[in-house]
Image (cartoon, rainbow, N blue to C red):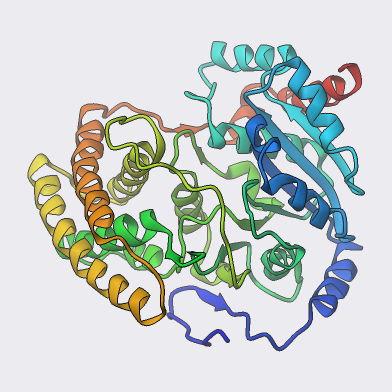
Length: 405
């Protein structure tokens, strides 16, 4: 059974296992009568061939409160797009597969490029951004949720608990962030959160002093989860990072745009397992190696925007402080795992810490060397101001692809 601890910065909504899923879904159906709820699924074509997606679709087909499901499809050719349409055809909800690599979508990308507003790189951030553009263009949903497509332990209760805080009109929350224990089999997972994000936030507080933003991020039990829900009114002004700092970037946007009382975290699952990224210590642009660098950059950018001055000496001190903090936390995680009969490979964990420490320096150097970098995709309000027809054009392009192929 979960605890009922509140950290005092953001609300934590626990799962005390005192209410049935049927009751939650009944309320969600009543909310959905006046506040339509949509779901965004950003996915790679390769995920359609994995173990998780068939089960996710089976669970989603049982959900009756969803108005629309938007699937953003990356890394697919025409034949794979046709297969994806067939793959999702059994969904009972109104749904669309957005082929991000279609000629129509690529042409729209060229339009943005000519205006200097195109996303700087491919990836999950751009996929989510495109899906949000389609959703905003539809203009008929009050609530949206998003979750990953590689969840091996997926069940429909995860979605219900994720959506409920922002769908309930009597709650003040504009953003809900999902959290869950990262346990897979006999292993303690969640390496990047445990060994990078938690210790670097502690280290930053020691090096640069107290910051409300640092306390805010430390309030989240699992800040890197890919599951969150939002009220759609905030979407047009949401800045989506173009790199792998998407989750930290969205939390940072919530911090910038909303009061803390409008943000919550919610316990959405007792067991969660998904595809695990490789460490890739020798490849800076792959796996957890790249992800950890992008996460560090996202945190540094936000702190700089709030007035923190970073220098090479600050980053050197931060690296040393982080390394000590991470090793101290590793000791606690190891003992916690051992007491609960779980496994932690201390050698591999320390290898991860060493790589993350180097990536703090790499991210800091990239930050210092690129003062003119614009890491965010322009907001949809900005796009609309530059080209008032673009939102309707992207909606029409996605629908035309669905009909033609």
